[in-house]
Image (tube, rainbow, N blue to C red; front, side):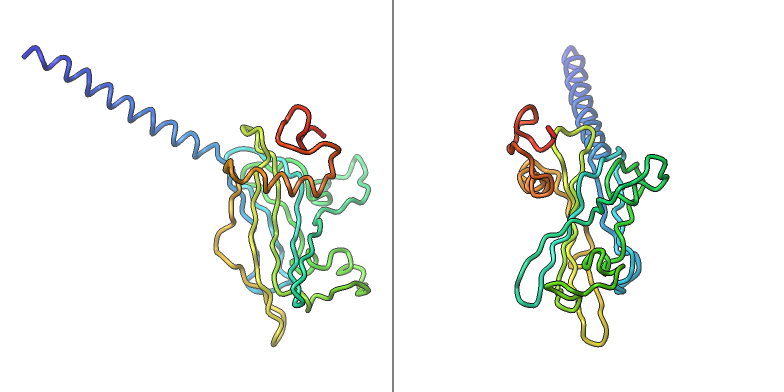
Length: 214
């Protein structure tokens, strides 16, 4: 019966190892950022588009961009952020800038899809541009955010297609918002930020050549 003690000890060690692995897995899952680009009202292009933080941690929104695909096969990347001056006592700074901290369960109203595609022209009624709303056949909305536990910015993107026959309609390509949180995604998200911020130095080092050094 002398072998019972060592066997019991070995079983307990295995149980504790499994328990710790499950604990670490649950911790990583809870601390992982999860962002949703939400189409609020079915197929209506005048419906609001929301950026929702479904993670457990606060994230800081650094940039929101839209990539437009035209009938002619052209691709245009625009910034959703409005850079108009905001007073220090403005209580709605977050909604105006389309930037800043986004609390868990919070959301940022990016505007309607028509507004996102046309920019301020949809408010001013100005159509003097190289494209019209009817020229756009697909859009991709993407955002780069800083997630507290991570040294590197992470991203989210979602694609939609537009149909104009019988009245404009917009449909998501997928029911999911693609999460760009893995190591292999860092270069892609960094490229978004570098195109947005045009930093003097570019690269992966946080200390001297990263987009986060600005």
